[in-house]
Length: 109
Image (cartoon, rainbow, N blue to C red; front, top):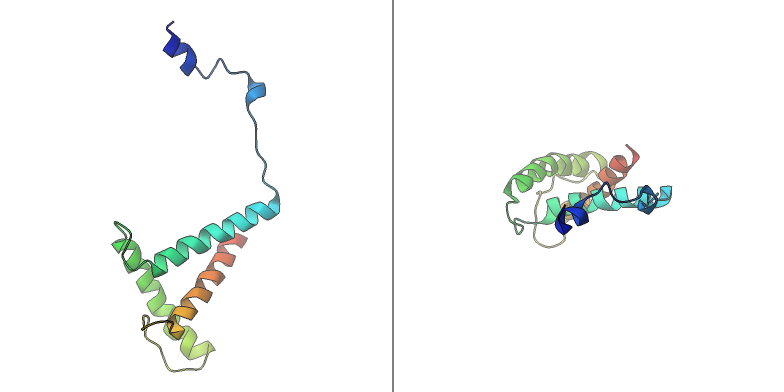
């Protein structure tokens, strides 16, 4: 056997060197929530700046174009809002809260 084959062999490693990391439940829950929130937030607010993000933008656009008017009209009792407005419109605040709610739901699943 050559030196390269010896150094690449996994079967030569003793099993006592393998370390299994166990995350505490609080860390697992927080990681799930933050990961899902960041993915939803970036998918909703990326604006097409990320490469190859057009399918994601269309998906989230379709999602929020149904949710934002319903929340504005049914829950907040205000006239339907545009999905995207200039600056920090109410539609963007609804999207941020919606990302948080969906992240909580995904964390609980």
